[in-house]
Length: 79
Image (cartoon, helix red, strand yellow):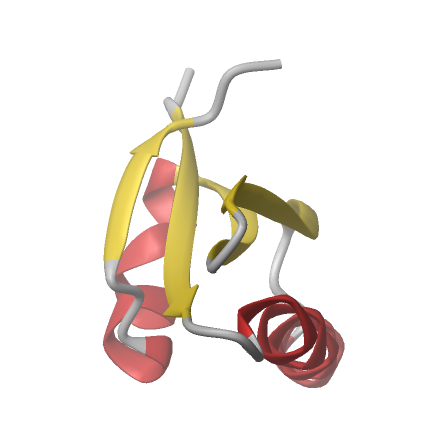
C-alpha cells in the first residue's frame, strides 16, 4: 500500500489567507482536469501571516503532480 502524502504550498504576509484559499481553487481545477486521485485539498493557518494550501495524494501518483505544480514541501498525510 502506498504512503499518503500532503503536498504543501506556503503563503506568507498580510494576504496569505486569501492567497492560500485562491490556490486551492486552482488545485481543485488541476485535480478535475487531470483526473488525479486526490485525498482532498484545503488550507490551514500556521500563524497570523502564514497560511498553507495543501493537497493529499498517494505516493505513486505524486511525481507528475509534483513536477507540474512544484509544491514548496511535503510531508506524510496524517488522518
